[in-house]
Length: 375
Ligand SMILES: CC(=O)SCCNC(=O)CCNC(=O)[C@H](O)C(C)(C)COP(=O)(O)OP(=O)(O)OC[C@H]1O[C@@H](n2cnc3c(N)ncnc32)[C@H](O)[C@@H]1OP(=O)(O)O
Ligand SMILES: O=C([O-])CC(=O)C(=O)O
Image 1 (cartoon, rainbow, N blue to C red):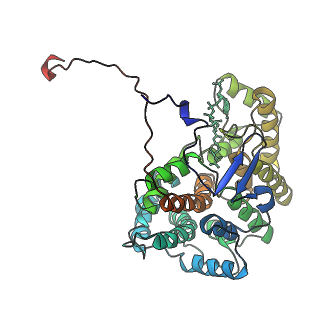
Image 2: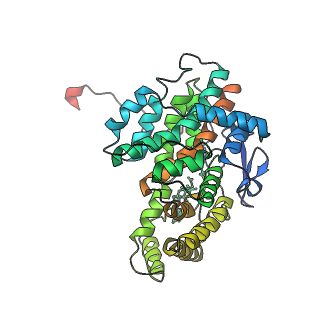
Image 3: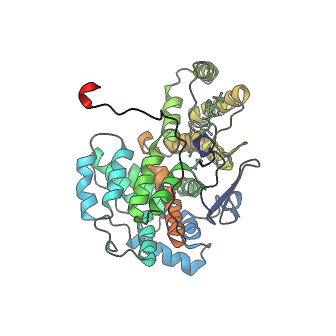
């Protein structure tokens, strides 16, 4: 019998990767050896996609090449497009988008090609298509049309334009671009692990990222950013009411979304950047309510539970200040994480072995079979 694994596979090494690395004690994150603190705010999301999917930071001509591929790849196929009205009116956006991402495979120009070269093209295409799919979903439920993308804006700027209907200020676009960089990859998180398990059966990249969308949706993972916003907006009164709210939640044995992490034993380095951007946006917009609530909440949670905010916590006040609807926060996470998921699927396929762990049977044994009429 195999040795018992820790609950939730804590500290179990499930894959070898050269895509990202975390030092949980020191609170450090690296993308292909680059410290996130050196990348965030200095590297565009498109450069980050090149780093994760193609293995290196691009030079100017490589970046131009990737940008033109991403622009050319934006179109979503007829099948997914026709499904938007069907899935767009009910349920949650993540539910709808999980289905729509799956449908992208039907009209993919490389649908019939399962080579690694075709998989690389599909990976880039998925990064280009998901923001458009989210915008298409948003336009459908608002009864509007998706604004045309603007040539001088990147993925981040065009996404804000297409979601809010207004061209973002240069600084708002930069801030959102940094958010996409910060969320792009994170070692063996639940959705990436799900994607790798699917890829390891030699299934296709669309199947893998559809499974990842399902895993990301849960409130213990990417769904926490939406839950944080709901918490912040549910607190009535002023900042002094935050203390009582937090204590009541903790006394009732409820978890506060956006706090705690399986790997970080100190502050998540992404939260540090997001906190700064939340403050900057509060100053820019003249509305500091959610920033101040967040600051107070993190202090009370740290004092009473010793827990630090994770990436989802300050992302909530940042996205809210950027005018993104609350139920699109997790889809925004997916827009970024698509780059990491696809990089991991490629890495898995380049050196594959089926992922099939063991289980620890805890049910009854030696049961006596009885005929159905005697049960
Ligand atoms: C992008 C991301 O996925 S980041 C994570 C997003 N998820 C969240 O923010 C949801 C809230 N946080 C959590 O649920 C957890 O901290 C997780 C899921 C992130 C990590 O889970 P685990 O490593 O399994 O830790 P676990 O849930 O066992 O928590 C350990 C202890 O800390 C407590 N704890 C952990 N997080 C929280 C929290 N947010 N609020 C209150 N208590 C918490 C648990 O109740 C538990 O206490 P106990 O030992 O007294 O029972
Ligand atoms: O690593 C994790 O478990 C969750 C996380 O922070 C992420 O996916 O960004």
